[in-house]
Image (cartoon, rainbow, N blue to C red):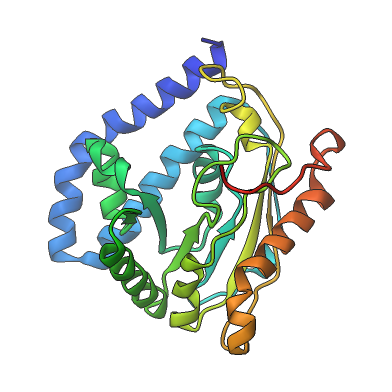
Amino acid sequence: MSFRTILAVLAAAFFFLCSLPMMPVVLLLGKLAPDKADRFTYAFVCWGLRMVTAMTGCPVTVIGRENIPEGRGVMFAGNHRSIFDIIMGAPYLPRPFIIIAKQELRKIPLLHFWMKQLHCLFLDRKDIRAGAQMVTDAAEGMKAGKSVLIFPEGTRCHEEGTLLPFKGGSFKIAIRAGAPVIPVAFIGTGNVLEDHPMKVRKTPVTIVFGEPIETKELSIADRKLLHQRVEDVVAGMYQQYAPDKWKGGERRENG
């Protein structure tokens, strides 16, 4: 285990230790003043994420923040290489935001508590009815002004510079809400940890926000191809901003 790995683990442990006395406060505040509880939760969690990022030593460059509309719900759809996509990317999302997460994360008690306070939604791929309800809940959240972060590949891709096919189902959220979709390219996050487990490596990370795609203006035919359009934009941004050593990756079929 490297020194940076130890620092990152200690930062995460410190956050969760600090969170223990905060939990009853957040629960009480949520009953008395829900909006204040939400603002506190987002600020506290993003503080923890920034602390973990700082301990990795990774410089993070963010491009295209001017493309994010203000005062409305937006869907952010990006490639998925690493847990650091969320750790490094979430603090740059407009608040409040919703993250669509896999069902298995419910089993991690402290993490589940804070994800619940962030109004995260959990996707059970085996339960079609629950998946449909998740789409409805996320769309209602977007109509209320929340943004949503999704990873349409459905799982992490294990090769830098390569995208798995984007799946169309999750884009129903933005279409139902009449909200724009912003393609997001995460570059270098996999090299921070996933490419060499148990060893955090100092890696320049770039997060690119593309121009919004308005779903209200799309024809029925174009809506069916929205996932492919977003995938093309993400792939193009990756090729434009990634270091040469990671360019030229292929798009692969699942499996």
